[in-house]
Length: 525
Image (cartoon, helix red, strand yellow):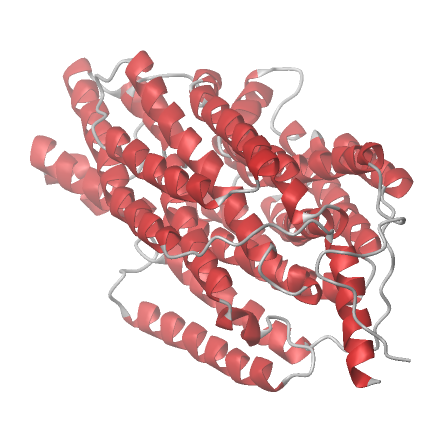
């Protein structure tokens, strides 16, 4: 008797989670995703108070943000690989548990040294949550239906990124709470997420006899960390063109080259190099890096623009981010619903990249006199573009790879987007500092520029004529950042145009995996 493999997109769906079960599980995932993203951004407006209370230095100021981002970015590929080998439910609860531990230590920290360690623990947990949330979604939900949910997740990611400074500002400005609640506020919600997932997430456990490529993981993590540390220190602690730059860049690239060699020979590589033979994955990866650079690199400095150039308080600066959040929320959700209804997705990638480019160009025209209404419109345009583009890049790649590579593919895209963001923040931060220094020197003379240190000024101590000049300088310098980001967004648009649209699968990741394993078994008999 001949055994035949099941036809495409036909499989036993009796074990598929019902829509109600999916929504219940997604509620736990979304809570966990929100608090993990929030951890990266909530300290933005609280840092001056934290540093003052703990007697930290300017170097520590940078590393409170960078240490969490480094740990999150560098561990994403490892979490993704483990998701292909072990219980996704167990891994996601482990990552949330680590996040709770890190948050508690940070909230009760007695000094900056313990705070930095806690931020690393938080980052490892957040890296797991960021990678695994999308992987678990792909395991539960067919790509044809994924757009509806992916749009909501994209909105959660964007809201967590942009709303963090607002929440942090409110906590710091509330006398009976204070900066420690920037870390503690996520603990009850994370515990709630663990409980919800324990009760609602039901995925089959795939047991495979395989070993993690720990050498590859070490080389990737060390290589990436070296490059990220370089990008965060260059322009601040040493010049971009310096011996330290040469040492760290060459060292990081050598480590990554060794990682490629190790990964090409490993039986179970952390990042299967074969996935880059897939045109959609390669193009989506490049686009994700560019989106990370443009979005994070440009928007992270808007809060500083609001406070220095426009003279707003931390809380008001956070509230001014709402138009971008609203634009991202609406476009991400609506695009997801339309993709699920009609099964077409490329148009939203192209439109998103085009609108993001326009938003960057519009924000490149701002200055210290730009009205709040005009600024809000420009920010909403940028949010709409990012909302249509960011999460749908993941959907396109997940739809075009075998089910057993879903974890690795998803984590690779998340990893490169985060790395692009980290490098974008560092590089554009250096551009901002140089622009501020040169414009201040031009307008007020070398002494006023602080000898090139580009320290953030205390506006309350400046006389009125100097205050107006400083506000104008920061307005012009911030606009220049978006003019630098616009060509990067345009390259993302060009890359997206070359992604080939393919019909969305109607089976979930777990169903596709069972089908592929059955077909492989049949082929060997």
